[in-house]
Amino acid sequence: MESHPLPPLIGKFVDGVSTWETLDRTDFSVIGYLLSCHLILESYIDEYIQAEAGKWLDFSRARLSFSQKISIINFPDIEENLDFMPALAHMNNLRNKLSHNVRYKISTESVLPLIHFLEKSRGSKLENRDPISVIGAFTSFVGAWFAAMYVRIKEGKDVDRRAAFERWISAHYPGNPRGA
Image (cartoon, rainbow, N blue to C red; front, side, top):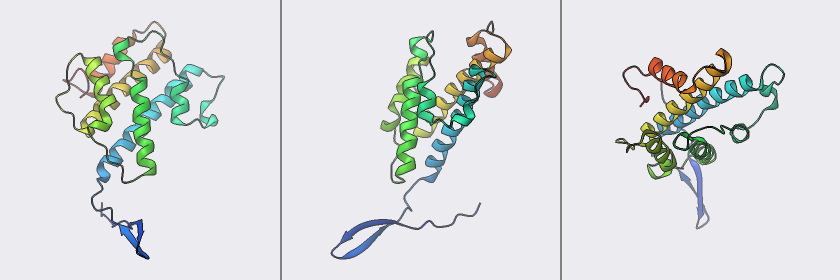
């Protein structure tokens, strides 16, 4: 795909002169990756909510925000080390920051809540703390979780959640039991 230069942002007004801020140092691949991961997770969340609501409620017409969607989800029996909801809310905050400020930089520090969750869920330190790797691993975990919950609803409540989770991970990340 051919890249076209983007217009600069309006900078400060200095000594009666307008200045312009170029975006040539902006890493659009990180922005695009985070936004893509967010959209992927939102699609899983949408399917899960609709499956959980059943045929009587149509959540697609409610036009809920991502934040509203995750606020209505409750997993009361989730193990503490697998409770990804606070980290998911943080990922949404990162997405909101990028959506409103193209200059915002995703750093290892900015994804620390995701790192802490992944380390807690795995019981070991993450070797690769690169933001893209962290975001990808977190997206894989949360996507697998919602996929497992969806399967459990669609195939029957007696489907073991952990087995459905592991089955999804194995199918989509062969040779790697945790997806990343």
